[in-house]
Image 1: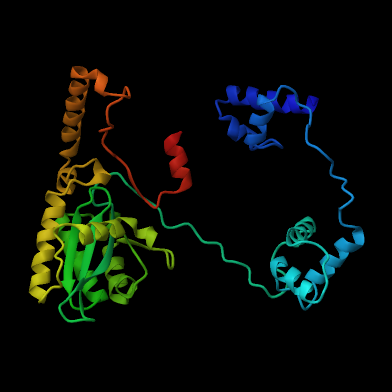
Image 2 (image 1 turned 90 degrees about the horizontal axis):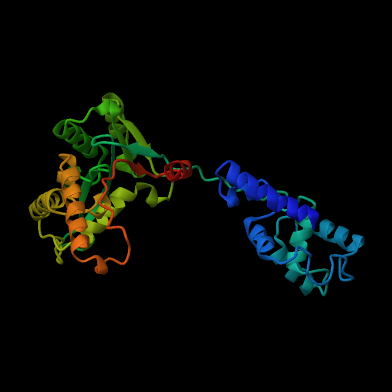
Length: 346
């Protein structure tokens, strides 16, 4: 009981001394934060749990050894306890439950990959980038546009700047091509006045994205190229979000396109609307063009004044003291890492 008091005192003192949460201090002690709270709320620190660990139902040493021998035998070495126990039962053998098998293996540090079982590959973190201004990080992808001929599609190539959310480049084509994509990127860099050797372009792992022509073009321009992890579309979330807006927008026609020209004209109209009229939720409901021209700060400051005046006129209508947060977003992340989130909170 005295030891429990010392642990509680240690957590409380160090939390106050170093201005850390008690949860973080608990991480360097033998107890969890949940246990700390339970001890703190308890009137006494006696262990009130019934029974003890020396149960007569415990495995004998020979039974434990038998489990180890079975799990490491040629017949069962590549199987999990969830498979081994039922197979033993089919032979009219029962030694212990699946959870007991796991506990014994864990105790002897054998709860790993035995014999020929393949060790799982650890997924690497996705490429992470930070944008504090326009023309620093772009992402791009290709989506399908239906035609009036079943099984045939037009392909809409789109580049988006993650900072201001402007669509910086596009093409409508009848095929997917690394050459066409590289031409689109070069045109977009020229039109936006981007400095190519300070630009990151992120995409998925499709053929046009990783083709030799595209790779050679980006290398020649000095552009940093990064890609999704294999089979992980969420690494390119800005392009995925753009495609969702495109497909569910009222601008999207309900019927397939009858011709290439119809598809191209529609794409031009959509992009004009998206850049100049669409109030984007990710940038505090200003338009991408307003943010690109750095007009958003003035607009957001004005909204803040409008809300504050409304609160002064009718304070009873405001349940919380604070008005809606209209502060400008100054930093945008692509695949934000855990340490970037913690650093921001700190």
